[in-house]
Length: 142
Image (cartoon, rainbow, N blue to C red; front, side, top):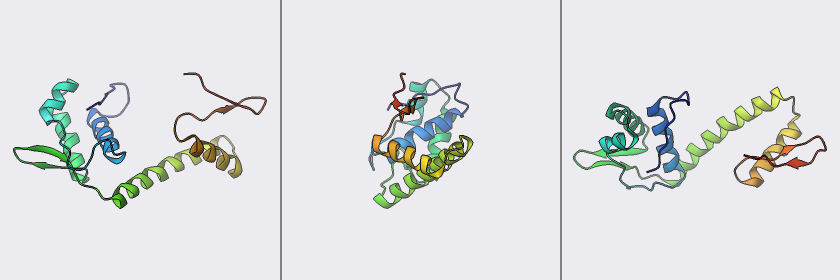
């Protein structure tokens, strides 16, 4: 399992673990019934405290993403398509609200915001080109 932690992120390590595993479940990388690494094993792999991984797993179980079987470990909970869709829509609403707030700070008209949203939707993912002085989209170089 690929989980990368950052001490500079501003998020607690258990929240980073929670977010990564939740994302992997919602995007289908982890399937229902699939076993997760043991709490001790994940802590060892990430070189962090067992308490930290235990907190992340407890929160994931509380929110219904995983379940634990005594003596067997933790597993991804079976999810129906409606549950996953609702969780993704909730995240989308939060991200759109943040984008709308940023658009207002940039003094964008509703039509300009809608055009940028449509461009991002068409691109699928990744950075959307920035408009240069000539009005043409310019790709960002990373």
